[in-house]
Image 1 (cartoon, one colour):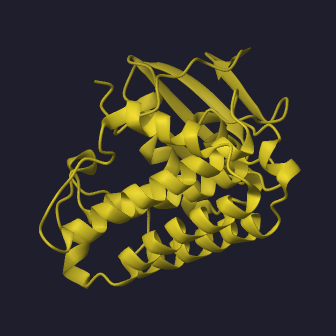
Image 2 (cartoon, rainbow, N blue to C red; image 1 turned 180 degrees about the horizontal axis):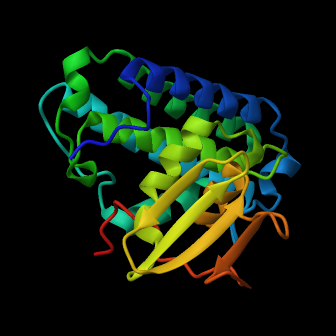
Length: 248
């Protein structure tokens, strides 16, 4: 089934995609040969790996929308997860100018694929997550925003919008372990409950830090605090990221 980001219309989602694409282009404009080979925020990946992944996922999501307009469908990646991983490794070691050209073109292609949609085409089925075109657009939003931060050039989750954080928390609700509920208490009084178990963990922090933590990204010490039955406890474990790519 299709999913809507909280309170976002399709036009608002397009505006969010344009802003996210601008953010990636800003990163591309600052690339140097040294910065491309520097470590990213993701273990084992250089910034070049992150850039190669952005290139691949943007093109893959663009294809979902392009095919949907012709009432056709395809898997997210031809060849599945192994092909995706090979493409990232092959592309990671490109020169800065090559990354700038390739990643910029793929992001522009993806943005264009969603910008040309008519109102009814947002609900056209796609193979991605057995959803609709809107799901692919939401995925592009997540990928561009999160991976910009993963580049480690200074943009962090503190720049994430409230709308993005709420969407991300809802998307990542499956990471709450079975039998548990996470009651998120964001600074400012906003409360969000994830999961349906009877074992309740209360998590407090800024909305951006709560979203980043659930996404498996680093947060500063003490930025997210957990309590269980009124007692302070270590941050709980999380289930896997809800992947849309079959492992076989």
